[in-house]
Amino acid sequence: MRPDCSSDLSLDDIPADASVLVCVVTRPADLERVRAEGWYRIPVGRARVPLAVGYLAFYQTAAFGPERWSVRYLAAVHAVDLARRYELIPDEPRHPRASLRYYRFSVGRLLHLPVAIPSRRLRRVTFIPTTFGRLLMATDVVDLWHPPATPVRGEVWGAGVNARWTGNAGM
Image (cartoon, rainbow, N blue to C red; front, side, top):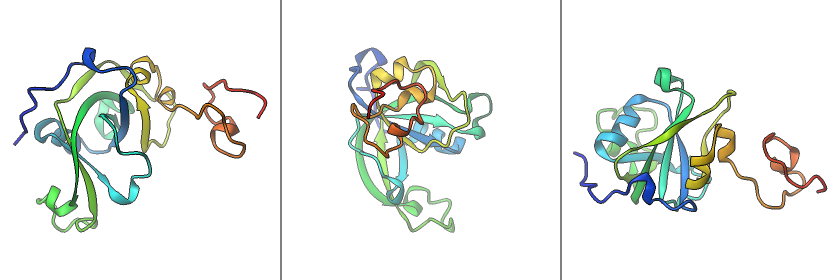
């Protein structure tokens, strides 16, 4: 049953500097859980980004047909706790990862972004820490990443992987 989320904000109420974590949703059933039950899961072993965020946005993979390869939805984070997969999804008790621990994000209602953010080139997306302002201004998923102010030699950003970023030429 969906928790009471009557106090959820609208997009107009979210500050531009609010922290957002873009998460990958690989199955329509997982996005439906977010919508109907108000939660999303991240495997503890895969969480290599800061999880102290105010919002989750959802990158939809090829399984979503016409909505594939894009970010269209956002939800406010209300709480984070830990649970085993079999506790979260009891109808899949024999799943290979059933006993693994997951972060369970309790979230508010899904908010539809005014414009979908597509991935115009095939990219392997996992988690993208960003801000709400960047989410609203992005025209491509690559715009959601923001490099450090000063690139460090040898890091991916310093290698020029993000073609849209025009940082200092002299490193």
